[in-house]
Length: 487
Image (cartoon, rainbow, N blue to C red; front, side, top):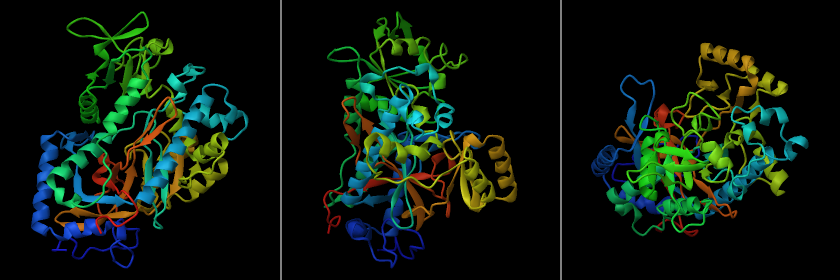
């Protein structure tokens, strides 16, 4: 290997590149050979170029509360993670199935609530979710689709089985990093791709553009689409600006929009211009001060009334947060059976609900063995990693769970798969997850981009992959066909 993988240890986890005996997995053989052609110094030089490229391109994220500054360059590892065609077929089918069921659930919970009446999902759990929006009961989004863009998080356990860890259905982020990872790796290490049949991810923007255009309420040749951002201080602002540029649409803040007679207009130097579709990256709470938080300075006054009147489309629709509540997540397999009459293709992680008295007792008795999460936190916040926690941390969470059991779930610690990662001049195994991006059209078509964002826990032994907690990312390769990558 020219030294780059010398001394690499597979360990006791499922390894994305190596078999338990240390031999290379057949589908990684081509990548393994390409890496063998690079010496350690050559690889380190390319890694430095990649790091510099990300800085120059402004590929950043925000970490709040860091004394060293909030704006961080996104760590990128040059060794890609490779998935077989067969693995991807299962992932693609499972995610499409899941999103269809979740959209059915959202339509049902805001209309007839049959799943609640049939006691498949507890009424109190769904209607008590922090992001359930009773104001939108009876509302009908275009085509009946609530979630147009989803980013469910997948993990692989020690047996190599993919499982869904959680769903992100409000304003899922990370797709810009997926696109930048592929772009940078292609330019800096084109030799890795030589002779390998890796499916492209670059058509994501075209798919998203087609989807957004299809939502326009007016029949016009060129509907006006805008991306609504909270502004440059938001943690995902790089992504907002990146996507607006990729889609060829205007990046706007709430102050750039005005509602007149229940129609949304964008302020321009040539006067107001009517807006047809808002790809919003602002949570419901801040979208419109007339309906939600009256102190919000981020949204647009009157936007919700224009949406209710059918004069503007929103992606994603309002109220989707009830379906990515971590407690509601536990019932997605039941939703699939209820709405689709199918067995789930991708399983959930076993989940214990604080709202269930028997589950609550189990959680409180096993805080040292479980991962406890707040139902509506993200980014790795509001979480107790039980096996790595102190007595004081467990006692703190015990008090939190007892005070508000509905707001907490617990799961066993899944030993995430590991992938070879270049860290501090050496290649070592680091734990990874996968966030594929899924698009749902009003006509029912579901598009899953072949790849996704592989997030890496860069700290040795850590299971927390979030960028805000010190994580990085990798390019994700999905291979064409069933053979060896470049054999």
